[in-house]
Image: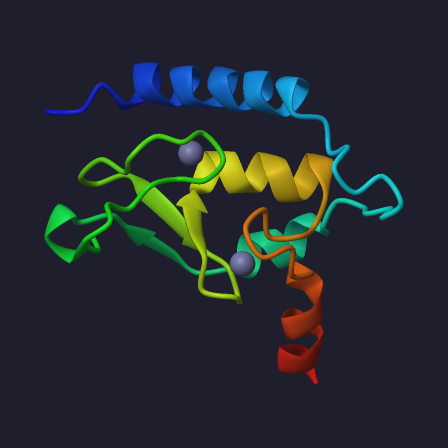
Length: 115
Ligand SMILES: [Zn+2]
Ligand SMILES: [Zn+2]
């Protein structure tokens, strides 16, 4: 009703690709990292963003640098960092399986949780 989500989603994913191409992961060239398994990424919790719950400094997706909009789907990583689902899914599944903010390996916590 209120959201033209199809349009928004297309815009977001284009922007992510753009970001990824403009920021090759070159600041740590010695670190070889692989994408995370799709199953692992899909197992991370999702939530809908609510502006009322946003933190003081403004909830912002570190990948596309856009502020979260009401009702957008947010993925929460084991390290408690949050991103747009389309942004972080693309990052983790296609680029590398670490949190873009803290560079924690998202597979590590999961391996423990599964044992
Ligand atoms: Zn984003
Ligand atoms: Zn993190």
